[in-house]
Image 1 (cartoon, rainbow, N blue to C red):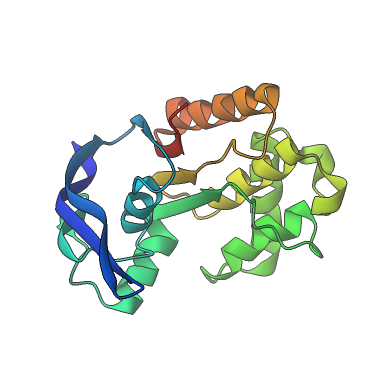
Image 2 (image 1 turned 45 degrees about the vertical axis):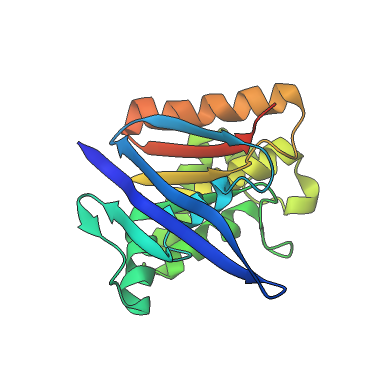
Length: 204
């Protein structure tokens, strides 16, 4: 069963008076529980497609479907609810709040869902343990390595138990050993928890 799909999707932008197509007639189907890598050079539209799947952008034409439902007519509030409940985002730049500990960064994502503080703290600790960071839970980002920061971002993405994880160049700031380690963590989430993972990376 397909959990995410794009049907004849086009996304165009105005740049300096010129209309530029980041995506043109793209169609793809992704089954639940798959680990999919989207490869391409810079500017090929791969991050644009990821943003459409994540509900961060809307297509100029065509359809983006989640679990068979077209996201195109969603209101802004409905799209925010879709993101909160169904999608976890992992970014190359980590996007952690520097003044907060690893535990607090993960717990913050749970606050948007209305979870009580005590439950948020316990859930954050559980998620950090799942990515082998239990001993680093009270460290700030500046006290963590790049690989550790990216694992915090994975724990944060898992906070609301989404069905889909979208990873935009997640290994871009990591050395090769840490990159392999990170991909192993993601694949474990797919195998153990049935997550669907869509990863964008450069075509080397």
